[in-house]
Length: 305
Image 1: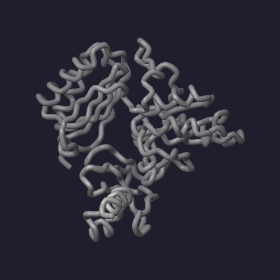
Image 2 (image 1 turned 90 degrees about the vertical axis):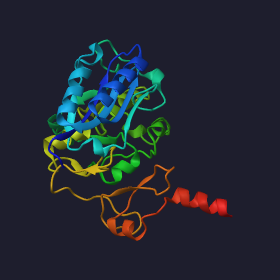
Image 3 (image 1 turned 120 degrees about the vertical axis):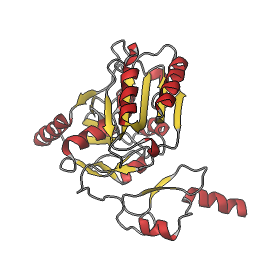
């Protein structure tokens, strides 16, 4: 890895009156600095991951912070480069995270989501878990990501909702599956924290009473404790790397969908129109590099018949 390249990950809630203008500005800025990545803008704020040379990414952060709405923008840094992203994508969407409930989200003038859960530092997470365990009222970790991400890494004994996309969370929360947690301490978690900012509001609106979220998400927790804390396995990331580890001693918790060999390798379905990911080990991938997922295989079979 070229030490002169970096990836910047960030999200920032702030009332945006003209998202289209922000989109055009961000597109021009990234193209001028030769950055690639993904940026989403909505009336609620901005969410992005960009990669390039250290100098270019730092310049991008500096200029983005010069906008009145993004003065307090916090950035997480990761190893990588522009090559980890196929292209630059800057889009305006109704929500920063697509729960399909934009009407439930409000951003206060102080740039905080109204009603979001209490933020805990990584150290406070461990302290709360230990305290509640001693009191006989243990904390439940609640995964705020898509279910496939938890196949290679999650918090110990976490609840993993049956979600293929973020839009599935509302049905899961309203299904009754998790009603027993509504009066229990629950710590939600996701990659960088943004999904939990919104998810905890949606959960509170549906009766969950004691909610917390990890400040900075799994990324910040992993930076603090590596593989010596409550997190187990690898972290799925949204670029060409597919996954990252927090130390050289990362536990492999995933297993190959085809042969059950321990693996943390998530692979795309070979159908270019499909976005399904599954844990497939190196051996099975080498044997069948054109493998398609079961959904695509079923669809293909039905067309043939």
